[in-house]
Every structure is written in structure tokens, then in C-alpha cells.
Length: 175
Ligand SMILES: O=P(O)(O)OC[C@H]1O[C@H](OP(=O)(O)OP(=O)(O)O)[C@H](O)[C@@H]1O
Ligand SMILES: O=c1[nH]c(=O)c2nc[nH]c2[nH]1
Ligand SMILES: [Mg+2]
Image (cartoon, rainbow, N blue to C red; front, side, top):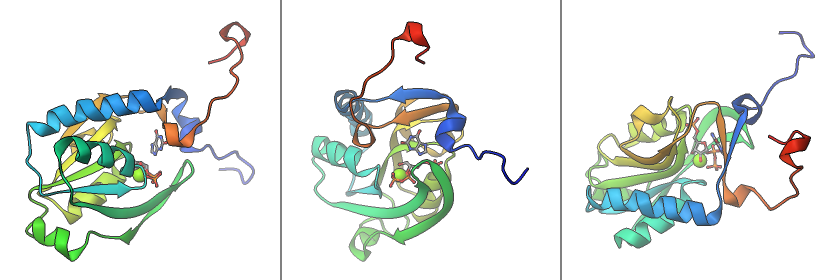
């Protein structure tokens, strides 16, 4: 590649935009919980930070689960994926609840895209149930329960990353 060739971000490569409002996200999390309620009960919810924190709070509230832990992973810097770094694993108490393999634990994230994050966390807790609100085809096989599939060339815009702004009329070339 030429030194000055533009590097496209994951978001730019995606091409299509799928904006999600708070209201839509809350509804999708509740729909996810209806499905999870058939699978549980779960000893604890494990949120993959940071995107998994919001759905984990809603799902835990709906399922009546009060033990909530986190796995903290850093990978995308805004919208470019780099090396995955595990900043924090689950606590010893949570690991014990999952019998060392994650059995009876519910892992929650906002989405799977390439599946790299999901694979890393699944490998830590192979018997846990893994749920995401949204799934793209590459990551979908890793997920046990999800609500909405979007195409691989779609970028999901979450309500905590966005704000209301002016949009040019479609007639003038808006996407
Ligand atoms: O399937 P993958 O290609 O691994 O991508 C999915 C992950 O990417 C996003 O997290 P991100 O790394 O952006 O961090 P954040 O949750 O802190 O925003 C999202 O919340 C998932 O955890
Ligand atoms: O906000 C986001 N939207 C996405 O579609 C996505 N894929 C990976 N990481 C992501 N973050
Ligand atoms: Mg994340």
C-alpha cells in the first residue's frame, strides 16, 4: 500500500449506518430478556465493558439478577480495531459462581462484529451463555442469543455515542 494511501476506519468501510435511539435500544434489550428468561436462571451477569454495561443493566433488572461483574476489554479506538487487551477479568467470587467454566453465568455485550471480543471472553468462560443485542454475520456463530442481525457492512450507532444533529434533505444527497 502506498505510504499516503488513506486508511479507512471500520465505520467508513462499513458504509451503511444503523442508528439506534435510547428507546429502540431499551425495547431491544427487553426483547432479548424475553428470550433469556427461557434459558436461565443465571447466577450472575457479566458485562463486557464498556458497550455491554448498558444492556447488562437492563437485562439484569428484568431477570432479577443482582450479581453483576465486568470483563474489561479495550480494542476499538473510536472505530479502528487494534490488539485486544484484557484490562480486567471477572472476580474470584464470580469465577466460583461459574464453577471455573462459566456455567450458569450470562455474558452480555451490545454487539458482535468480527467476533474477536466475543471469542476472547468465551474462551475465558466456555460454558457461559453469551447474549448480545445486535449481531453481524462474522460474529454471530459465537452468540447463543441475540435480537437483531445487521449486515457486515453496517455500522451501528449507539445512543451513548451520538447526539441529535441536522441532516441534509435526502433530495440533496443525504444517505
Ligand atoms: O466483534 P468485535 O469485532 O470484537 O467487536 C465488538 C466489540 O466492539 C465494541 O467494543 P469496543 O472495543 O469498541 O469497546 P467499548 O465497548 O468500550 O466501546 C462492542 O462493544 C463489542 O464489545
Ligand atoms: O459503535 C459501534 N458500532 C459498530 O457497528 C461496531 N462494530 C464494532 N464495534 C462497534 N462499535
Ligand atoms: Mg465493547
